[in-house]
Length: 82
Image (cartoon, rainbow, N blue to C red):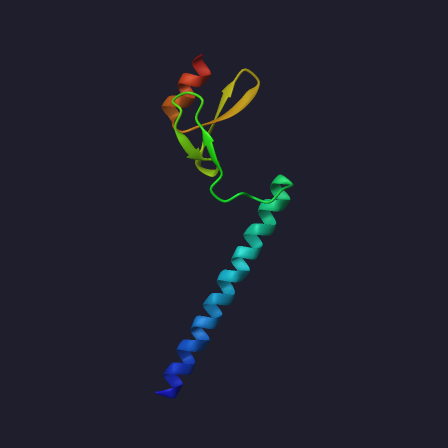
């Protein structure tokens, strides 16, 4: 019984360490890519329909020379046709 408990404890510790390492690596890569730390759940407003969306999930739409985040392909087409 003690062997099972030790095995489960070690397995849990290894999985926790791997999760921590992944978090640190994602944090470092997002800082290197943007020059600033990533903001979890940063919300932006779609300029076409007004919906609030997570910046990481937004689709890039273009108005003139400006790139804007939009919520869907429909809003992207509407933005680019205007």
